[in-house]
Image 1 (cartoon, helix red, strand yellow):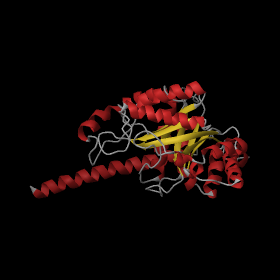
Image 2 (image 1 turned 180 degrees about the vertical axis):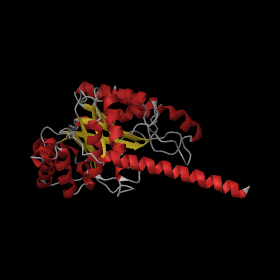
Image 3 (image 1 turned 60 degrees about the horizontal axis):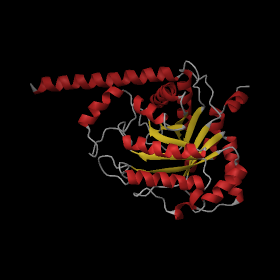
Image 4 (image 1 turned 60 degrees about the vertical axis):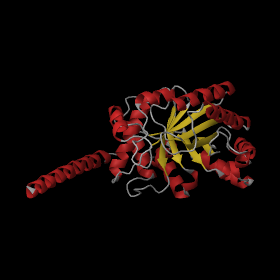
Length: 342
């Protein structure tokens, strides 16, 4: 009996490994053709907190403005938080904000500067901010107004985790959207990559309750992503850190999400697909070059371009070295690709 059980277990393991090998081989074959879609000239960058929290020289601002221009960066999410549990941000944390905005107007005219606000969301377990409290949400909106008063072109929210039944988060977007729209500014949000199959959410919820050691992933369903898109001007998908073992599988991940998100909301809002320049958990399989190639392969799969502008969001300015900036320009920007290809 024990020997038979061991034999069946061995066959089961071999079967699973065979399926994995087939999937990896299929992804490798799919990965080989070079993408034909060019990148775009509408792109975003997440920027470090020091820009709003510390003083900088004119030369530093000028160099940053030149970097943004050469990279065709249209939107910069300057980290201005984190938001405190009560929904506020102490003024000492953004003491350089006015100087930053003045420098952006001088050295990077036309580039939109967003105040990037976020925090760990209380959602069935540990966390910092309780967005279910209407008073907390109201203070977050007032905090957003403070940054608009300083001259920021928009508000960028990154509260995590956000689950697809988070009505409090949608209420926060409603309140903030009223503010930004009245002032002629923008509202953007960073979200996790969408689910692979919406139908699995009830199963995840039943087997992996929130607040436990093994929570189910906070992935937006199609319906939730549409609900968010109806309330904002831009959606940045945190596509990075995929934890897949091969470059082709990671590239397939980027391509699949790019095509899916652009089909779903690309006609409603500006979409930025997040790409990494930091060392990911599986850096041999996922890097900036592979992510950009995957995004372009995803664009290849579209039946038509989205109605709204779209591009990539680089995470982040503090992890991108000069060589990566050069590779980004040569493999993503349409003018650079055309120049290289003659």
